[in-house]
Image (tube, rainbow over all chains, first blue to last red):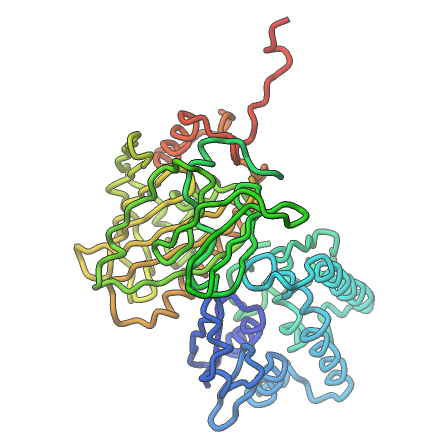
Length: 209
Length: 296
């Protein structure tokens, strides 16, 4: 398996997390996302015409979109069926949070790009931070309700790819100037997540806290 | 914030972007020392810049020049000469530019962090340091007042993975060289014994509490892909960014004597002493004058 990867990308981190937690060997292809914008050059557009990271190559199969990759890797390689269980109701809940992780929650990614790198001046930072807060609040309320029934994870009684998809940008919110201290349920969930076997860090997401 | 009045900051050449960040026919807007500026590259490649105000009315001209792969600007008619880095002309070295990363802190905290070997084992665990190898041996520090440079030499530290190309841990020697308040260069033992890689951090102080940090690496080692080295460098820097943005106050408490330095901080102490000696104000936490100390 080949992962087209950028170390600072929260979306690539989703895939690195699952591969690590499953203990799967893979080859990293480092892409000069910043400052080189290699993901917009013709060679990479052949792999992903949308010009986005991550992308995964497994044999003849080429996949783009972190959420799609999580689904495939879990369905193909997780023999325990923990990360993407067979139960249709759980699958429905997971799909719901995968869409959220690639949708509303990406406001935190936009805020982060604006506050960290160059070339993202066009992003409306105030709007991105407001939307980021709204997304965190939604996770916080969801986890608060789930906790009342004894459920500590996003879509099931145990961690699934829904947790992996939502973890990185929630954990990186500070990078985009979105203060997270008011979201107690989110913060407890992030801490729980860091205790999972196979958890790995990325810059901006330390092992502690 | 409006443009600083600190002469120590105003006399500097400071980086505002990479050459490639301003393409022919485009204008880059940014801030330098509290002042909004616009830098334009004409179709023929020439660069020029000026201060701008809230109404975007053209104002004073800002001097700009290109060097070391970056665009440098100064507000001064008689700026302090730019640092000389002869390694840039060495054809044996591969040049890697890190790009700009924004950090919510003052420029001096960035320079101090770069000078600090004591944090390697804790912040860059298993890359630039690891426990129990936390000991920093005594090293030499020299302040060269005539050129506004501080040199820290014979700095030694054990590193589990000193570079992207390093296969195993080794003892590494560092030489640190600061030039003025916003630039610091590092010479570090390369994979080939007896040779030094060169890297530098070039700080663009946007205002007293916001900086953009640029950097470069001049690598002697030829084998590893440059993009791997870039990811390595950006990983190190983003680990620092998280810590730096938690340091409060954002401005550096230069006149506060409550911090007790250790011998590992000798380079940072020399830098702080130099900042005090030249009377720097920009980015510095103002001295608190206790009411009882004021004569009545």
